[in-house]
Structures are given as C-alpha cells and as structure tokens.
Amino acid sequence: MTRHVSAGLGASLEQFDDPVLLEEGKVSIIALDAVVDRFGARWPLRSAQVYDHVERTLERYLGLQGYYLRVSETDFLICQPSLGRFAGQASAIRYLREILSHFLGDAHLADNCVHQVNGISTSAIAANRVDARKVEIAEIREEEERKKAEAAAAPAPATVDRWTPFVAGDGRALRVSCALEPVFELKGFGRIGFRLVRRVIVVGAEEELTATAVANLSRRDILRIDLATIARGMDRLRTDGSGERQPSLIVPVSFTSLSSQASRLQIVAAFKEASGLVQRGVICEICDIEGVPQVALLSAVSLIRPFALFVVGRLQQTPPVGISQFKEAGLQAMSFECPPNQGEAEFMAWAKASIDAAKQVAKSVLVYRTTSARNAGLTALMGATHASVRTGR
Image (tube, rainbow, N blue to C red):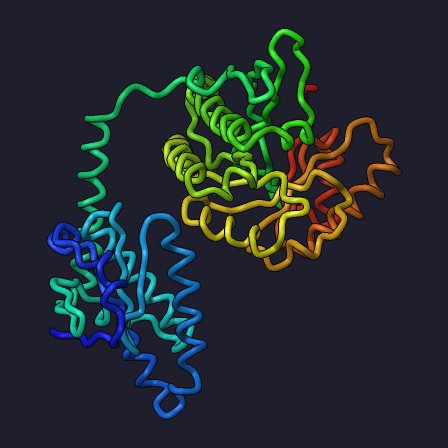
C-alpha cells in the first residue's frame, strides 16, 4: 500500500527514514480516513480541530519515548525507538482508538487504520496494514521475552551511596534521609501505598534544611536530592520486611528537575525502576510549583505523565494563594501537609480553607500528616480524598 506525502517535508522525514528503525518495524502510520469520511463536507471546517486534538493526544502519550509528524491530510507518522515492534504498533492502535472514540464515538475502526512503514520517499510512503488482534497477542509475548532478558542481564540494585551524601554547590555536605508513610483512601480507608517523606540534612551540624532552603539550592543539587530520595525509597521498600508488594509509591520530585530534558531522563529511569517494586505504579508529586507559569507546569506534567500512575501538585503554602494558576496545568490531584500543633478549631478552619481551594483545581486532594485518624476522617467530610496520619516527628 502506498500513502502519499504532502510537499515540503523532506527534511522532517529524515528522522523516520532510518533503515534500522524501518527494518525493526518501529515506524507506523495512523490514518484518519474514518474521521474524514464521517465529516464529509464538514472536514475542511473541522480539520484544524482534529489535528490539534491528535497532536495533543500524541504528545501526551509519546512523551520522551517517541516522536510524530503529520505527513498528509489524513496520515501521521509515529516512531517509538525504545519500544519493540509489537509494543510500538499496539500503542499506535490504542492512540488511534482513543482519537476515533473522541470524534466518532466508535473506536473499532482504528483496527484497520494503522500501518507498518517499510519505505519512505519525499512523495510517498510504502506501508502494510497491521492486524490489530495479532499485534496485541504478539505484544504480550514480546513483553514476556523482554522481561526475561532484562532479568537475566540485570545488575545488582544500585545503592543510595551513589547519590547521598554529597557536597553541594555551596560547599556543605548534605545527606538525604527517607521514610515510608502510609497513605489511605478516605472513602474506605484502604491503604493505597506509601509516600516518600524525605529530609535533607547538613552533615556534621545535623540540621535539616527547610523546603525553601532546598528549593534555593542549585539545579544539580536538587536533581541529586530527587534521585537520592527515589533510591532511598526503593531501598526502604526492599527491606521493609512485610513481604507485601505495595499498590503504589508517591514520589516527590522538584519542578526544577522535570523542567530540564537531561534531568528528566534520569527521573524517568528512576521511576521505571521504582515501578517494578509496586503493583500499580509510581505517583509523581511535583514540588516547588508555587510561582511556576501555567504553560511551563503543563509542559512538565505532560512529559512525565506517560511514566506515572498519577501526577500530583504539592502545595507548600496552605491555604494556597493564587491557586488559579494550576487550573489548566493538567494536575490530577493536589497535596499538602497538615501543620503541627493546631487546636481543633484552628485545624477545622485551616483544613476547610485549604481543601476548598485545592478542589478548585483537582478532583483529588491528599492531606498528609493529620494528627489522628479522627482528623483524617474530618478532612474527608470537607472533600479530601486521601490522607496520612502523623506518626513521628
């Protein structure tokens, strides 16, 4: 089958026209023919809206793993070099199903509209339609083989010594300590897993840095703290002694680390390793978001979302000021800690104001370190969805 290419795309096609990628079946076409046919005479008026939705969908799913290009009125090229042949093709089918379901209310037509690319020229693309059922079966086998190969070649787990302690840019020696704190879903009070509670301590003085002091460190130091936190958390999961695989792990990561492609790649690699230790996946909790422009935060959320079960925004100041900046940032939940040493009336006023504000941005609200199970229950009445109870310092 030959698919035609719009004029003027020669240079953009070069990243797809790689003999190795083509031979390994890692370049696919998703075709929008079904959408064009359904819209008929309305297509010229609706095409810009369709293209915008398709691009946002692909950007959300591909993240750092791949790239795409619209090559004609109906066709988008997709390449995911890090995925196997069938994993890449199966994911392309899923992307197109979501797109067709959005516009047509029917996803099954996607099973006939994904093609494996065999050759690319400046005017045409040679491709064969893939069989969705066979691809999805092959994807399962491919994943099993990949896991076997990784298990056979896997080195011993890295220790936290690689990241902590370390000498910061200002000359102080810092170490990262991390504890696991249970987090509960308030509707049924079932545990969803643990959150990582980290402390950054000045070696020798044994002084704990405040969140503001950590945020004022260099980008390199903050990344090292983020990676040390994940490594320490994984060590805790491996040695907690319960023998029970937790549902999820809430991992705090600075916005600063996610805003750089180089540091984001290291965070993603750490997330993938941590995901292997829990049942459902890692929940990314983005810290230091106050004052971050909405567009910048949305970009960070979109790029990390493919690698996280959920993306949470962590608030330092509560009740928050200027909460509207987070409304369209793509966050699925907001979180914050309960201040210590509050009387009941003070706690009730603080909790209501903080939760009401957070609910303006996200459906889920996580309130950490409530002083008792009773207070955790009270936050549920105010609209919180998850909570933890203070057990230590």
